Length: 150
Image: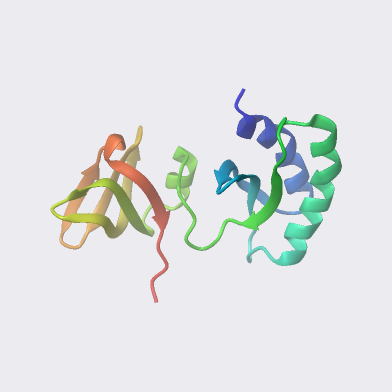
């Protein structure tokens, strides 16, 4: 089991007990440091008190379960308004929402395309981008995230 899946398995009940939902678990290296991050969400939005309460509740469990052998920083963060969509259920939840599709390689000279999420099927993302409907293959897509319009 991947580290993130293992952490999700014991973090989810703690996050839910604090009235939030677990959006994502991320384990990354940035610079010379490793970071374990929980991204949380809740109706009406997450505040610093939610992040702090969940962080305090998770600390002793992380010490006990010791999911990562090396030294790392632990953070609890809001999923944010422009959160990345990764799992099929993320795409299902935000169907019809404004998104930004980031590509690995430019398509018609453009690597970032704003649009409206129309479909998701096995990694293929369909969006209304301006006047055209475009389906992006999984291999083309580096990231899909929500886009806030003002």
